[in-house]
Amino acid sequence: MADEIIASAEPIEHSKAPHDPKEINPKLSSDIHYWAQEFGVTGQQLHEAIRVHGTHVEKVRAALHHHKAS
Image 1 (cartoon, one colour):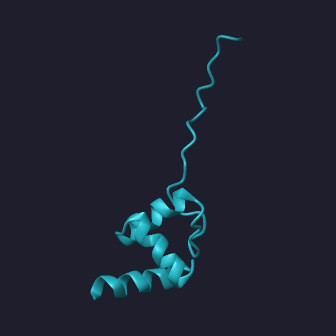
Image 2 (image 1 turned 120 degrees about the horizontal axis):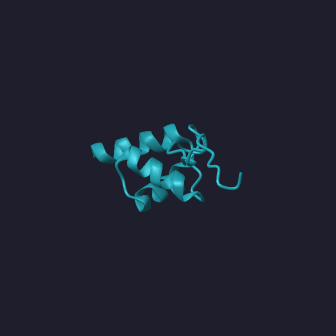
């Protein structure tokens, strides 16, 4: 029995989705990575937008969109 392999065991996949789809948690590197990619900015730019506009995704999205258009 010790030689048996459990065939149904699958590797754990880490979700690429954000922790919360409506709020960015700046303390989670996975959130910063996800949202920086989503918005096409650097992590530093994202942190700055969060500092100024808060963590709500739509507010940050609007601020970064406005900044890019300028």
